[in-house]
Image 1: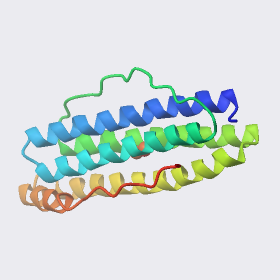
Image 2 (image 1 turned 180 degrees about the vertical axis):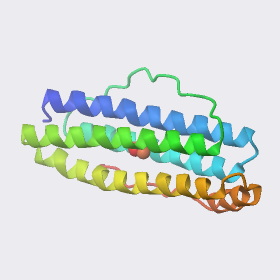
Image 3 (image 1 turned 180 degrees about the horizontal axis):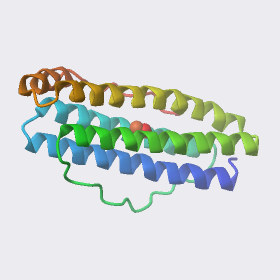
Length: 170
Ligand code: FEO
């Protein structure tokens, strides 16, 4: 059975992943309203991925005979200055999530919880990818600058993203 201290920490992370999902859905709405449907598609899929992260922790707690706890989720921001501002917010958010995952891994080491550490290693790798992807889009937006055609080329690329479900801990 999972230790209470680990369960509480994982439950806090479930709340953060669900907040992330809502934040990206809010960003999807912002892009859709700006007629940038490719960006909106990318954000909508990101929201699905974040919910799958929450479920990964949820299933893991159940498998360890723990109790997932669903808490109130704070409302996300609704508006951004422009696409670059929005993706910079996404990148900063991911950097904050990376810190949170690292803190969880530190706790698992301190508590000698090897099973949790193995799960968290998946998330450590995932965060490298998440930060790299957001960073790349931030860089592309900076390169595009005020160019509308640059923005629409990127919008077309982001339209191609599809949701690939992650296997859960079940
Ligand atoms: Fe679940 Fe984007 O971190």
